[in-house]
Image (cartoon, rainbow, N blue to C red; front, side, top):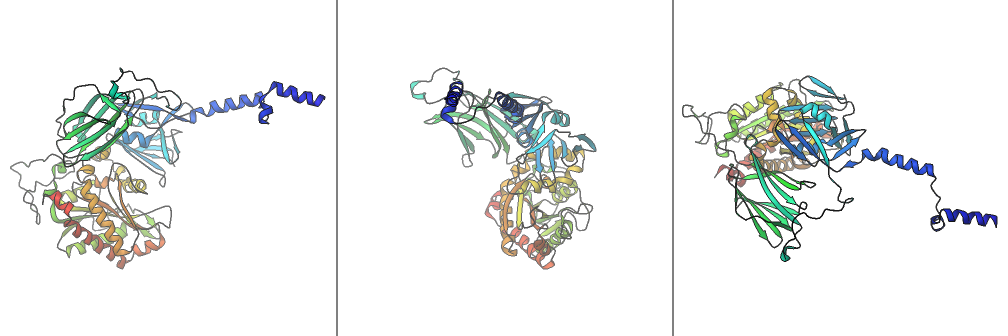
Length: 556
């Protein structure tokens, strides 16, 4: 009876124990769990909006934010892509490359320092990697790039009820519309050949979609369950990219037509909820303004040039006025990667610089046998600077520029050929590592001109003005090499490759195979296999010269 009474007394104190059969957590255990929860709380993601102030410019980002031991970190890949900087993280090289407005830093995680032009800044816990994403403290970014930053928290919708809309009730027929388009803003960036169009909302950001209509020369943005309380008159822009913006009501909400003056591409679109809900579109010119030659300068004479050839540009900036009908349709420039003190990939006893030079010389001979004039950026074991490579290409104004390289992977079984075109983000397996490896030495060259070019690479006109035709060249190239050599076709990929930044005509970077694969490396070093690759590249160039998409760019 006493034992039974004791059990009954314990159930009286903790009545739920009878139902669950579980032990009661002691008071000390409860205290420990609370302590553990609040200790780990700073490690969780913080719903936030980051504001970056640089000089007189302000940038807003929805990049992921973390707080650890009193420091605020941001996903630097997300942040820099939103504010228009350079970013690529290479797990293989254990480095993060960052560039913004003419300043480029390399964060060497293995050495624990950030390096720029001989200057070193210790990392000291300012960087960590989580889920293959690099997080950098806002304090370090401020030190490296002179950023002033602030973070405003954004309540999580799963924890905090959505506030009632602050606008007046909708008419009966519009009661399903919970969002209001409160304004449309636009701001041109002439030096970057882009315009940002921002839609501001009340009540949150609606579901939306957009499409580019090339036939009508417009971008149509559909905003679902959204209302517009202002007159539907046109908003005049006229900045060389956008003519006007018009809003019309539809059965499902609103359609915003962005009417273009010239072909443009959506470089970036971003949805930003929070206290200031909005969507922005960064629109970049596909066609650059023509630069007329001075009357006293005589056009350069080169074989079979178009009659509208302009004076020879000596820098990528001067070349920015080139258009496709001004290239030399029988001239090709080949860039054998690396060279001199830069061996490139070194695996299985082979150096990338030697293999690609041998292949490039064979490509030159194969193209010349087809009637093309071919120029190499190097014909021996030397290292041409980035400007040297640009200069060779831009002096001859080819209709094709090819940079030839060998690949590498931490997986020694990886094989195949892949072709890259310029892109604002690495797209495709291994694209980020290729960009990091191929850009590494160029980023260290350090001249002011190069720094400015690198700092603006993501907004460079190249990536838009020749993106589509370069992609067509790359597709033909990868398919032809694969079918000729029997290699795996790893396809067409994109990456922010510096060597392609100054090219204003169809341009690709070809990774002809993996030196890190012992069997493929042996093939790549074989003269007979090199000849197969060379013949495939030459045939791909010849096929591209007759391609309908390329012909349309030439205006034929």
